Image (cartoon, rainbow, N blue to C red):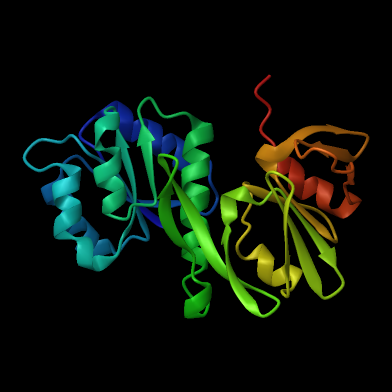
Length: 245
C-alpha cells in the first residue's frame, strides 16, 4: 500500500517512517508537516493509506479529513489526546493511535488497513465494515450460515477449523459458527500477522496463542485442544512472531 505520513513533529514522522519500513506491504510515498500541503500531495500521489496527526498548525487533521471525506481515504489517526476518539470514529477512520505509539499497536492498525485494502475487489455484500464497540472500532463481515446471513466480527475469531466443505469458527464464550466457505476464501479476511495459518486445516488468531511447545499451540480458548503446527507452515509463522526478549 502507498502511504503518506502527515505530522508536524519530526520525531513522530521518524517513528512512523521507521515502523512502516518494517512492514513489507507498506511503501512510503510522501511525508508532510502540515495539512494544507498534505491535501495537494494526496491529490497528486493518490495514497492507499495516510497516517494523520490531529493537532497541527493552520489546519487540524480532523478539519483536513472533513474536506477530503468524499475521497473515502483509509486513515489512521495519530494523536497525544484521547478526547478526539469519538469524533474520529464518526469520520470512519481505520484506527486511532495514541502517542507514544508502540510497534505492536502500530502493527495491529496497519494489519486492519491491509485487511480492508485487500477486500476492495470482493463482491459488495462481503466487503468488511466497521462500527464502534466497547470504545473501540471492530471490523465485521456478512457471511452465510446455512440459510441465514450472520455478522462475523473479524477480531473475535479465535480459531478456524476446516470441516470438509465447511469452516468452523470458534469465538469467545464458547461461541461457534459453521460457514459454507473455503479456507482460501476465508484467508482473504484473516490477514497475517493478526491471524496465522498453522496447518492445512487451521488458522489461529495470534493474540489467542498462549504458548508454543514441541510444534503444538495452546490457545486461550478454554477446553480447546492443542493444535499441531504443520512443518511447511512453521517457517512462515516465525516471520510474524516478534520476540521481545
